[in-house]
Amino acid sequence: MEKINIDAYQAKNTLKLSEKSTFEDFNHSDKELRKRLGVIRRDLGKFQDVLYAHGKYGVLVCLQGMDTSGKDSLIREVFKDFNVRGVVVHSFKVPTELELKHDYLWRHYIALPARGKFSVFNRTHYENVLVTKVHPEYIIGENIPGIESVSDIDEGFWENRYRQINDFERHISENGTLIFKFYLHLSKEEQRQRLLRRLRLKEKNWKFSASDLKERKLWDDYQACYEKAINKTSKPHAPWYIVPADNKKAARVIVATILLEALKKHKDVVEPELEEKIKANLESFKEQLEKET
Image 1: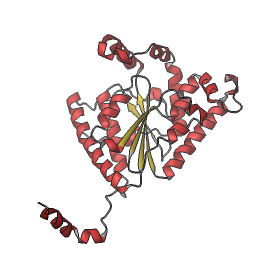
Image 2: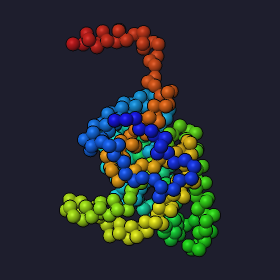
Image 3: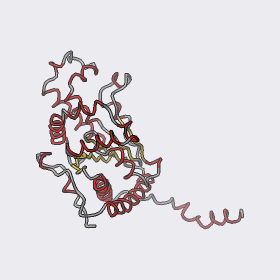
Image 4: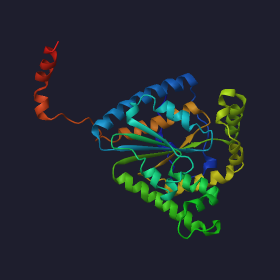
């Protein structure tokens, strides 16, 4: 399989989602794509081991996309070869009562990766400029000073949120968190087919919700909000990548490749050297253990 140009997927300049393809297969079969993913994710798992030993960086992987875009299965397949203690997945749903007593970034801040570990956000802090922008009435529940009704939520409010998110990401980046943001770019027709599959297959019925159809009717609104958010917040230290998501197997290969290639650029991530005293006595330590038999 030819080398994937990861820069081709990075959101730069002014993004127009309507001009981005939602399908990719690299002219390879599903079997070939699965094989390729297997190689990449093993290398990612090895990198995570070294990252943990190095102990100076955490990695934050943010996944956003419309319903059925494949976030759950991507997490399962891309991180399959990780040490389970080296990756933590957070799925952010409707804010809890406790979370609403804090600012909207609080629940994301406390879920950030420890040094040496990966955190995967399945839906992210960007829901606060996506879902809430499509449904501004949700903002009222946050009890923000000066926001008493939807009419108080103007464009300046959203501009402040983009700024706050940029400030949040810059802060954590400057303190050792490597940030990757992936938008799984799904076509409306492919979503229709996936929703139908959930209805047709009994074992998939549990995934379906009537709200999926209500939100689908707001497709264009969501696309506009995604486009605006990505353009406002794709930065060199926290880039957005637009991943064609109609073909799940290719999407997984793209995400895994971007992660591996970008992480490998951090040449300082190496296994720590043993202390000279320990290194000088390795043979002695081995002899002690071997004598026990």
